[in-house]
Image 1 (cartoon, rainbow, N blue to C red):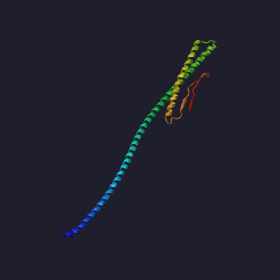
Image 2: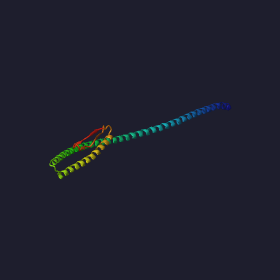
Image 3: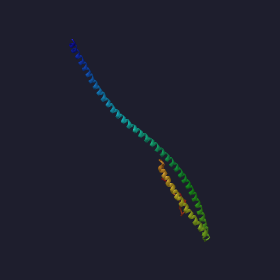
Image 4: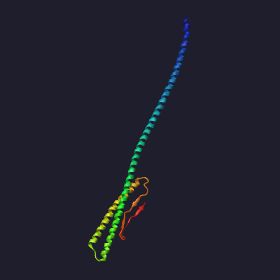
Length: 196
């Protein structure tokens, strides 16, 4: 009787063991699948992280570039403002110098007229006064020195104004003023202005 029970219980254990083995195999299969999926997801996550870090670095670089650009732009705006103010001062000084030169020319012209009158009086008396000649020579020498001094000063101002106008966007046409030139034949002065 005990032998019969033993023979009947053996297939049950075998069947149970078979089920456990199959279940273990299925579990092992799904474990491998899940492990492979975890590896795949981990690799994708690493790629996403690298892409995110690269994008973050690019954004930081772009931010630094914009900050640097804003700083440079501010400096250029300040330099432009200073250049414009300097140009205005140079133009005002140029105008004052031109007015002063014109006043001196008128004064010299009157003195020349006075000297001419004195010479006419001397010619009418048929004699030459050495003192009158000395005065005339001194006046001519003063005129030459004044013209040379203002010529050099105006040339420097013209050059400075032209350079400042070139540095300012939309500065417009440049204006170059030629210095007065004494016409000895007529005893007059001419001021030529050329618009370029």
